[in-house]
Image (cartoon, rainbow, N blue to C red; front, side, top):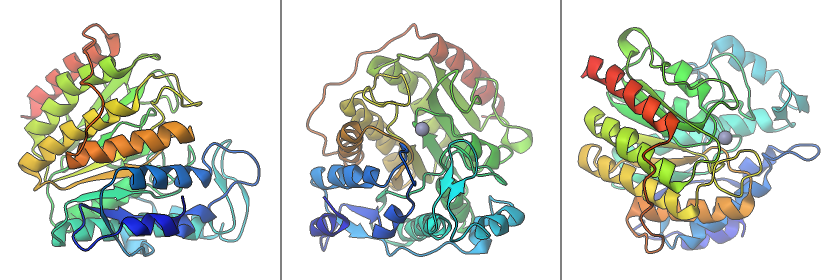
Length: 352
Ligand code: ZN
């Protein structure tokens, strides 16, 4: 499967917008690294296998102004100095010669996607940006991430007059960068399910935002080994009720697939079908309050088989075309879900 092939699914009346570009492969490690261009081959195969029809969003680079809504201008300038170079920014975050331009292209393409979701007739979107974004902090690259794609997109939606944006982050790692960027902002609800304790160390239930943003960060830390029933319980008890209550006008999903059973970097046990079930639940809220506007934005996911199957299932769930996979059972006793439900109820009661 190549970018060329995935364009075969483009149609006159598309089900969904698609953000993808061959240049997203040009961010490439020198040696072995889990965050590698081959992930896009798997993701594109998942997109094609969904059977949906897509209209491609024309990729374009983010401007300094668009990036500086969430990133420190000095950091943006410092990243620019890395153009043309190869090496490691920290123990696991690499740059290759084209990485900075690719990262700007990825973030800018999400800005273009948000514009199309607001102005066009197609509210659903799938985006395959590389490098991923949710660990990127205002002034630091980290955790394979250079620029925070979803945060740049959310900030753009805010600038376009959308007053309530929800970011649902089901990547197995906590999206510390996104949380930090909207920590004091009630206009962006950040809800994350993640393995805990785990990299990057943040995301406990008492991290709920501050000031005006207090209550608008909701963390659901899950014990290692949790599977579909734990995620279903977390979505039933916390994610979907909070989302419904917030009534977002736009939903961006930080859709990492590293909570999948096969993933080599984490220890959760989520099946491909459960990602479809989770996407369908979010899509129901988006249909009720956000004119259906919902985007699945790729973050992590390092087993190529799981990535392909899980993304396919998530797209089908979002578009309501899911035909396989049973409804997951529920796990009422997961300690993380129970703690998070209690904390979320308390924090959420204070702001609603
Ligand atoms: Zn991750």
